[in-house]
Structure formats: C-alpha cells, structure tokens
Image 1 (cartoon, rainbow over the protein chains, first blue to last red):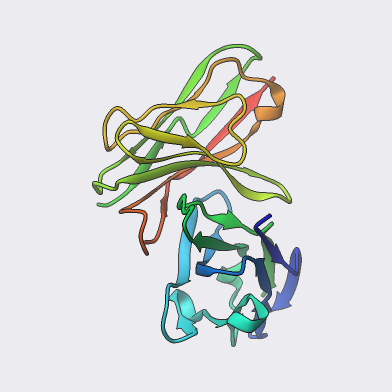
Image 2: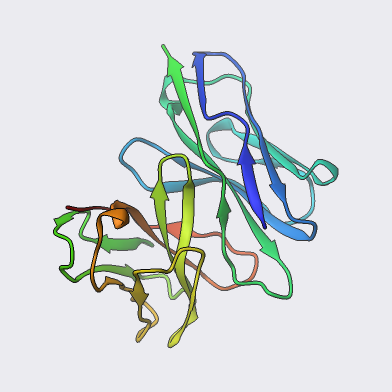
Length: 116
Length: 113
C-alpha cells in the first residue's frame, strides 16, 4: 500500500538552530510532493511543492526541500528556525498514475517546538 | 479572497443525531475532498469529487456520505454519528486533477458523545 513516513514525531530546537525533517514514501511511479504546515488551531498551509524539474524546491518562510528520487525522499530543511516556526509539519504525496484519484497521502506529522 | 469555507468550526453532538458539515469554495475548482485528522495518523481522505455529480470513496468512507450538486459546495453528511467519528475534519479543493495544489478549509472539530 502507498504510504508516507515522517521520521520524527516531535522535534525540539532552540532558535537559530538548523532544521531537517525527514519524509519517505512508498510508490514507484511519478509523484507530486508537498510539505504543509499547521499552526496551532489553524488549517493547513502549503509550504512548498514539487511537481517536476529542479529537485531542490524553495518555499515560503525560508523553507526548502530536496526530492531524491532514488531514495523516495523529500526532506524539509531550514537553515535557522524561529520561535514562530513552532507548528506541526506534514509531508504529503500524490501518486500520479493510471488510477489517479488525486488523493493526497499524508505522513503522520512532525510537531516542531522552537524554544526562544 | 480565494478561500475554502467550512461550517461549523466546532460541533458537539450526540450519538445517532444526523449532522451536515458544509464546505464551499469560491475558486471554481473542479476537485474537492474531505479529510479527517487524527493524532498520530495524519490526514486521511474520506471522500472526493472530481466534478459535479461525480463522487467516490477515499480511504475511510464508512459512516459518511457526500454530495456534489453544485461545483462550489461539497457537504459532508454523517447520518448516524458515532464516538469514533470524533475528529478534526478538513475540506480541500483543487483546480483540477492535474499538477495543482490543494487549498484547505479552516477545519471542523467534531465531538460525538
């Protein structure tokens, strides 16, 4: 079955520390890839997306992600986190194929807590 | 402003009492879907619709119904809610089935007692 795995469930960092959140998926075909952020009490907002082309994708608020096809990975990075980055982060994959239903498959989520 | 609007935002109900959560988008999107979010499970798709009068089951459709009579609206219906349907629900819409991003509503926190 198609699945998305986020390596870290809860990450605690100090301000200015670097961030890397891991995401791996299980699907051998073409995919669209996304990272969403959910601030406390709010809806999901798109951080960045990958459809095709350059595997290094830059998003909003200084986030970037790299698609490594051979590793089925799409890790999220930020060089220096801020207290305002405290949120839950979701990796999502959309398989593209003959039975394309448009479904987004989400990882379990990673809660990031940034200490001031 | 482009948005997906869900109502209500919060709802507490009793087992067996039918309820409807509404979802409306103003972006003329073809594709709409419902997800539920549960701790440790991420978001899972309940139902989706590729266009008016075209709906299909997602991964966790049991206990839910949907309809798509108009392009902008995609209500989620719980005919007989049960406590295991206590969850946070999100409606999402996309322009089409192609390489497009999804926009999410604000969420509806449902508690069934």
